[in-house]
Image (cartoon, rainbow, N blue to C red; front, top):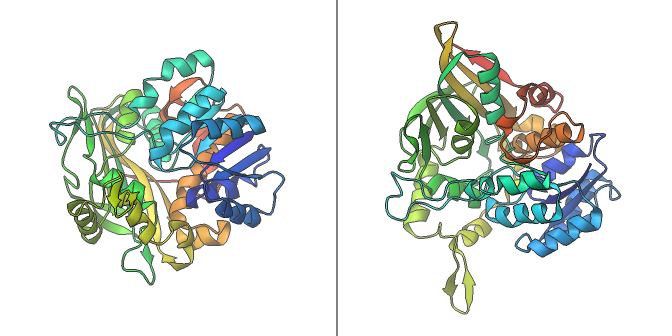
Length: 401
């Protein structure tokens, strides 16, 4: 398989490192606005023949198409912030190759009632074009990171193998990670973190459909495995709530994230000061987006690995019935930063995201997964994916009660 990797930040680096060891990979073009960053990753892999470097501006559909055509790629792997998704998605369609991303096209809150009604939902732009992709005979596989991605695979596995009836599917994410030497250093893109945490969270209920609520609502304590323990989780906007109801019969879908009071307080302050604004404002003689300034002031998550300690857990909590009896399970993956650094040289949050995309590419390359149109991970058999997780160094677990 020939792959154009658009975006060589932390997750992009981890994708390249993991894919380098897989026999199905013929070429992976490392394409980024920061060419020095791509060269850094290429030097780490030590394979400039299979991993050529190209400058790319992800805002330019024409440039993406030109690089894809230059290398005759089979797939465009989008590892950029989701603000670039529409352009990269459209470029893949025009070139006529398959596409994978780890987060869907952005939402736009309802203009009049944002905390009750959804406006433009995550992924709406992409799913509205499903018929065109199907007619062209190509596949856009949306949301194949850890959450969304692995969590959606777990949901499908639960439906196929663990339950007769499903009442609720709740994605729950928590960690005990610390970054030494920093009072505030997000371990993932702050641009994306601000977007998903300050937008109105989406909930889905049968008979009611999708609706929104206030950010950080419905606090609950969740007991995470792997020694992480109790973490307070809150509602956050996330793709699983938009994906799972399209494929799985259930009564309710939620996503809750363990952010912590301090982190929530910082996000609320950024919002109060207008520093979460993603639209440029004039400062003197220049125009700059406040959110981009915030991102520039913080350390690059791709280089935080040596300073990080702890574990992170992502998983899917399912409630329902089996053989007439009430049942609950939590399907999960716990990843340790030290193990991730030792094995991949990448910090744990980006590595735990990246391995799912590489498994997806492998299943497509080997013909285990196939299809056309625009689909989420739930559209495919979950077993081949879950069977590969341990081979990639990310075994899954299950709690049942």
